[in-house]
Amino acid sequence: MKNQTLAKLYTNSFHENWDNLAFSDFEGDDFKYSEIAKIIKSLHLFYQISGLQRGDKIAVFGRNSAHWGTIFLSAISAGLVVVPIMPDFNKKDTNYIINHSESKIVIGAKSLLDKVDIDESPGLKVVLALEDFSLHAARDENIQFKLTDSFQYYDDNQLTKKGFQFEEWEREEMCVISYTSGTSGFTKGVMIPERSLVSNIIFAREHMPLKSGDKIVSFLPMAHVYGLLFEFLFPVTLGCHITFLSKIPSPAIITKVFGEVKPHLVLSVPLVIEKIYKKKLLPTIQKPLIKVLLATPIISTIILKKIKAKLVDTFGGRFFEIVIGAAQLSADVEKFFKRINFPFTIGYGMTECGPLISYEAWNKTMPLSAGKLVDRMEVRIDSEDQFNTVGEIQVKGENVMLGYFKNEEATKDTFTEDGWLKTGDLGVIDQNNFIYIRGRSKNMLLGPSGQNIYPEEIEAKVSNQYCVAECVVKMDDTKLIALVYPDVETMKLEKVVESDLDKIMEANRKKVNNELPKYEQLSKIELVKEEFEKTPKKNIKRYKYV
Image 1: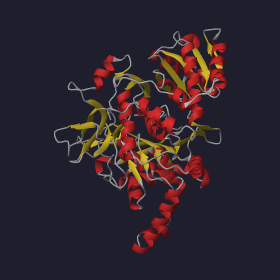
Image 2: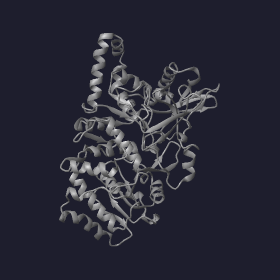
Image 3: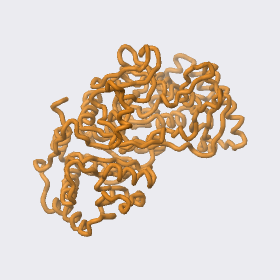
């Protein structure tokens, strides 16, 4: 791996795939690798004549698109640091990130640029529109001429493969500052070095069988490292054709885009998978007749094959596996997917590891695990018996960040004295380094007799119940209470009136309690009137509710 660099990976891929399709916006424009290279070189000229120096920062602010990906590559190919900003961030957080990161240029979607205040950002030189690179705001009154000249140059002078190269980075140089907005509500800038990006990309190339021309759908937020690495940065090094989905991925939209693109690899988060399971599969398998048939050996095999075929078709029909990450998958969903032999696997990572910590192929992984520790990392559990006693998962290795940007105190708090990264996740490992996650250390509750209660496990069971959209479990004195936002879509479809909800939730509570030990049982379910506020990864900001 030491002979591999970002510069070599991307320069080789662009040269080898020059005339092949690179990026497409779903129901929008298509771009060849040569066309993307032309835009990249035009942006390089603009950065240069705008006075940017190596190591300066460029913020990109918008939903997934071909231009978003092109801007990212234009920065790392020129020795500039990329600062992705989640489109869901509010104006205050957006401008905080621009200022804190010391970004010199912001390129953002037109619909979001009212959140960017150049007057409140003294280091910010230029704001461009993501869609067409038009000028939105600038301090230099001559910037429009510089912008026009930069893009005109490669209209007048043809770009050749030989004239297109990525600049080399040092292994420990920071390439990306990724600002996280977690369930604790605190935003920090994770400094991701070149070695972390390369390590993640090389691991993916060694374990995920993609090749030039294969198709990928990019629908996870590119401003988050999970989607960025595995739906974009890794496939580009192989010459894949990436289709970007800018819309919020509802089950209906996913069915449409995956049906048309037919990707060869699918990345997802539990929220999307669980919604598809709940909307498309659960209504069928919960029918009384189907329940009886599923208990009949020969007939159940036929039914399960049909269910699997329907689910495979939902994702386009030709993928070799679905990789699920960024949060825990419901154990009930996982068990059913295993039962139908659906080709899915669960990985584990965090922004601070750019992101990968563990993964294993779908036909080799262990049930209910989060995959096997990747071979460029080490893991230990902070407990007296890491194979049997739950403790904090701690890691170190090639993938680990440099630290938090301009935040030495937070960096120090996140590492142990002997240099291990504290993930904040609780779990155990087995003898083969498969990782089993139990929950977040900050979320763990203590039962009345001192038992450890992991609310995520209870929430997963509640969320699979009738008329439940999402759930947060909290401790009130010694009693467990589930806060539930009802499934409005199901209520409309099945004409469930609000006055029936209390009775439905009580039935749900009893059903869930039958599956739980006594110390984890719910005393009541309380309905909430609005959806829970979430992070950009779609995890609930539980600190606001518990």
